[in-house]
Image 1 (spheres, rainbow, N blue to C red):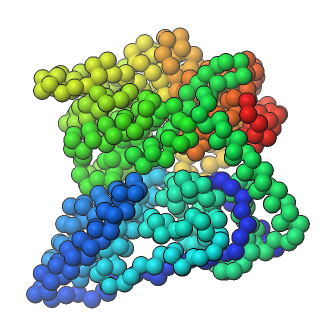
Image 2 (cartoon, rainbow, N blue to C red):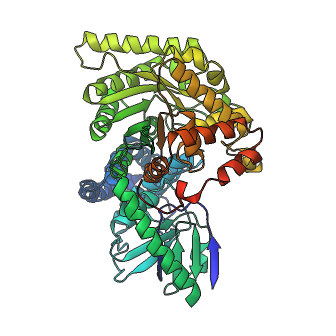
Image 3 (cartoon, helix red, strand yellow):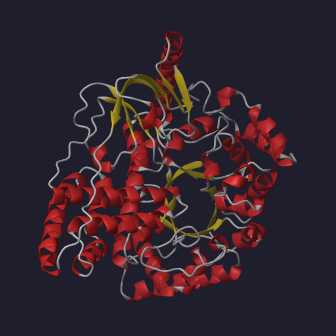
Length: 574
């Protein structure tokens, strides 16, 4: 028996089954050059291969948002033009031109710190592989050969692999690559298939036919389990199913404490597919729509019309509020079509609202698109990375200009659209009372706020242990921000990782947080926690933690919480 531990499962569940090790063939381009006379023929081959691949993507796009995004990639003029240039000017064959173009785009995405954006490289690879198969005349079998219940193990799974997957036979999924925002993770959650991703080296350890237990609750894989271990995990699997049924039963209920205090539970999303996936989890709205993904997945600044369509569709899909964060680019997020000047510390450099206030044409275009979308739903605007009242006033001046432009052309929009801001810098925290008098809502971005308050780079593994949003300085800052908002009569939400953390939830509840916005899959468990606390008890817990002077004291307080009050406890309805 062999036991392997892995943190952060992608999709929860406990299953046992036979391993199916998936090793798809890797297509590589011929490195030989072509003659100048052959360029027209190679261009024709590429166009035909693209057209053939696109027809299949159109079919898949009718059933899946993922493939609608793939259709945009297939139609991307940057890919077409780059491949054509490599063929006509560098005399590379169609396969090699396509391969180099895909690698170029994927390399740019791989250097981004944001996990979600890094995972989008998989979409580029998948579309280009689909075209490559047409160029090489190779058929795609995918996972169609699976004809019995198995646990699927692979280096990674592309959306095309996933589309060929039969959920009646795939009990669980383990991949060596990928993160919790990868398509295989999203797919597994949507299909309720237990999954662990990013388990490096797993394909070198297992073999098809081996007996395996996948515990995607604790993040454990057990190979060749003995009888006693099998008994333990069979009970755990049964308990998990009972817990899952209980969570489903409360999905339509409000996030309300035992003494009647209500809060909103919202989703952090990056695109329309995320919203669609979030709806079954019983969300109250979208607390953060990361508009930068629309920019980063394009090969040029998206037009007002394209942005309007995306924001409008988001507002229509979601019946609650849709908070759209204005362009938050720079730092770790680059654009393939815009060259940022090198900066010694880009996280503290020209990014987010700072960039928008200089690139007024780009910012104005986005503001007009958001305003137009506000005619179709409860849309709100949120500015990121604010540090001064002057920035807020300048941004609002541009917003007023956008309103006047739309009014002059007879375009409909919500004239009273609410405007809020992220509180994610020490400056914004210090000035919270002043900002609160000038905006309609706050949303606390705990990821950046924590790293800036603690002077800890959250992406640096050498100091990773120092990054903790339960640090007393962070907790006291969060409480002060909430109090500042409430004193001015505005709601305060949170869209950082802290909002979905089971230890932090009762603390935030007790501090008076009005809206928790998180990864959609976390919503049912957070709702369970809230429905098993009284507001009074949560307030008492929060007061104890805020008065603690060390992280050790805070952890001692939180670890004393009875299991029935956490998401790991018995799932009784409250």
